[in-house]
Length: 423
Ligand SMILES: [Zn+2]
Image (cartoon, rainbow, N blue to C red; front, side, top):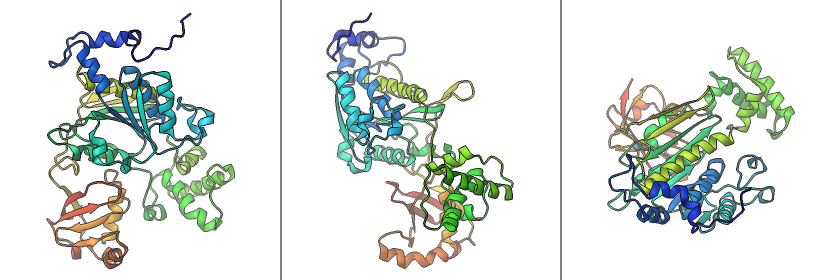
């Protein structure tokens, strides 16, 4: 039987295995690596930020604390929901309704004595550049593309003679996941790789209303268009099986009409509740990979991941590591605008909808400018009213071939730049 001694960060036993790595050099250690106390001290001094205290975040915080990081910050704006308890193991039933960041920090600090975890129950956008500048490494365990884009652009913008903060990003979906290491301005950034994303579920209303292409379109049509039309003011309750059944029948009818196979009850539930399946073990694998990268970056004990590891566990098991390339026309870390082919006869509004469908833009409320004029501005209200008539105008009236079109959006801390050519 093991005795239950509480190990503190000062107990030599706790770090026995870590010391095996940090007290001697190996065939893969960096030239700058000095075995002994230096890497250990560096690890203890490396202030690290964890974004997200959910499925991945719980694992990441536990792993970092047990890897010897001593000064950790964690940001999460969410509170604990009862449905989190099956995998977010730092939370208990009594914690439901409390801040994820605060509960997770307190739990890990109690179990790993000597580690300091500073929690923030807020959005990452609430913190300024000076806040982010204090960290040596940022690790993300997020389920939001928007938040990842924001922190990515922020870290790229921070780069100067003294600041270069690697971003380690983990992500999972069911049995699949990925871990990646991004060194701002040196390797590719998150934005460079956005076109790898599958198109998101949010589809413009016009597609739903006119020509659905996928089963999910039929389901969204049923919930967004048919429900209010037939049920009036009755609020859709996604936990009510009768409501889901009604949507399912409607979606099935529409799918038949357009010859689209694949609509099921479970899919209906998944689409309207926006369920992303989460598997605790996949989170554990991906979080472990992210934390190993953090340890290697902080100590230079071994070369870090360059730069993308994908893990696929749903068809047997497959992992693959590759170097995703930096994009010259990346709106965040590149220098060149992208090319955009525009139908000169389409209206600005149609162009806006087309861009909103593209996975790499993820625009919510975009504003459009060319180098000489503002085509459409979402805010302030007065300018929105003034520029609104342009939405009905044809692109050929508003821009010329070779013009640079700049698009800003409240969800992005940077502008997208396009060079226009007419089709
Ligand atoms: Zn980039």
